[in-house]
Image (cartoon, rainbow, N blue to C red; front, side, top):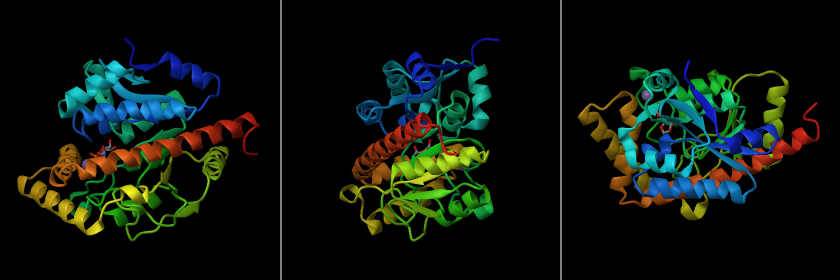
Length: 311
Ligand code: PSU
Ligand code: MN
């Protein structure tokens, strides 16, 4: 059989040596932001990971190979292709690989690659979740089911209120996924620091988060952990303003009958256009903030393991 999975040399070496690695998804590049800001952000993220003493591992399907550790040319390609490249969640992986196509991995697709590679920490902007009318449509992102089964700590800024945040939290509870607020009790709503919902636990240091992750592993509890990191206050958006734009985007999607895998990218694009790029600025900054926290967690985890792990 031809090669279906590849870890870049740099990432493989770091993993072998117990060095801290941070995984990054690629749907956020192709479907989450416009070109060229998407490529600029992805490159800046790689730089931030390195500056913070970790090895970046951007994940995507490149010519049919699920690749952990994309190079800058591959990142540029995904950014330029934008929404014309396949959006690859768990169910899409075998098809895009067999057809030898390119694909940008979602949180679910990236978490699966992390499991294959043995990467424990993954940073992104926001995860998918239960959509606002999920009680009727059953539109619940595969990201939530992946969190049930893949052993990865995912650092995000919560979920956008394009989703039903309360229902998303219920789905996570059912799936046994701990939702950890970093230095907060509040579940953030991506563009804002609060959603009106609470997290399961508040932890105040990367070391505590890493210890919980290791305890989970020690117990043989399969599945992920969701670390929610609120957008820094200087970049957070006015709640009423963003809610109004989200409402508009949702009703437009409804009028156009957009469903399935197209709905999330449609809403992300609409919101960016309706806010005249303001939301993109906030989005970029919260990603950087999550990447920095993920680096600290990954370094703490490496340190715990160097000292012999949680007993
Ligand atoms: N939410 C965002 N930005 C994103 C996504 C979600 O704020 O870029 C992307 C992520 O890749 C996520 C995917 O995994 O959308 C979820 O898509 P769906 O709802 O179709 O599962
Ligand atoms: Mn969906």
